[in-house]
Image (tube, rainbow, N blue to C red):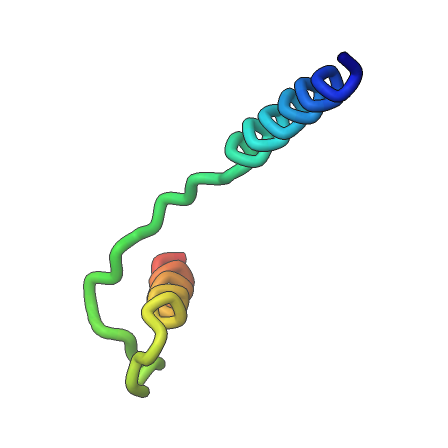
Length: 63
């Protein structure tokens, strides 16, 4: 009976870790840029980099 006890406790720990990991995610609301960037003129090869530049520029211009 001991192997099933270890299996069930391992399953409980795994489920708890998954719940904690999903609860730790932070939701961020992004603002949309309303005009083209005045600093970023290159070809955008990675959309995440373009989005980061856009959000950074919008955040600094709105201050």
